[in-house]
Length: 335
Image (cartoon, rainbow, N blue to C red; front, side, top):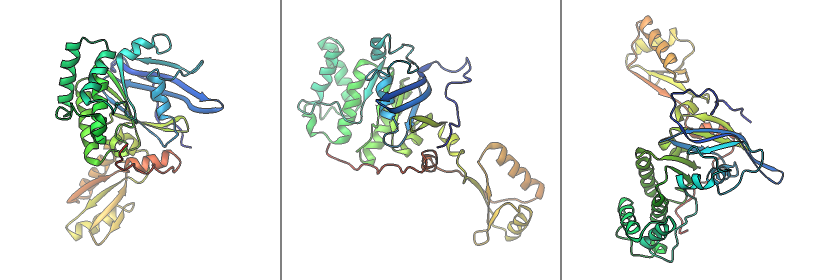
């Protein structure tokens, strides 16, 4: 399998924001099955971190451990969540976090408002505080009109919004979203992306697991690809895309003479005579682009259009997970 190409915890400098989530050599086994094989995490406060991986890679196990739902066991590495050690101070960790799972915690037998008030009671808010906060959050998540209706009548997207609204009752600074848009239609998924961006703009840290590569590309400041219990690569979406061969710069000309002279001089380029274009292998880095532009200047050739093409996250995912196909994308369901 691919080796790890970027370190997540080594070489951090003092000027970096404090880590909202930090883990070193995190390990977890179930019997003789090693699910997490020494992963490192450093997630600055107020950012979105996405953990990608095929089914069974260990994404949900990582979330359960970091959110105190599962104990990692002895000798399993060090963890700090909002500065607290889950092993010695789980209550402090739970006070700082919220967790929204793939399967909704919403009680369908009671109304949306009653679900919210139940969460307020669990957080020991007064009746007045609870009603005010419930009303504010229901309005924020566009659920006011449905507040008095049983949650069982809600669409998948409405249930997921209610689920996150319930999570926010405790005022968490770190939210774990485990597959938050699985089963949602594209419109509901885009609405959820807007909600996640709003949370982060408010200073919340989001730890996102997802099988939608577009989702990670859209939302995440940094992405890690988990495969066979190890982090195969970690970085920004653009950094990950540059790891995979296949990137190129395309130069397009409208003047046939300029195209011919460029094609003769740049022998490493692949010509496309029909569209008067040259394709040059490139990772798209600033240095490579500058050298191409310098070459064009030196040759006295002017391209009419320069475009950079890099592999997308699908290519990255397939390469780093040993050709594992992304699971079939779930369709809208009534669950």
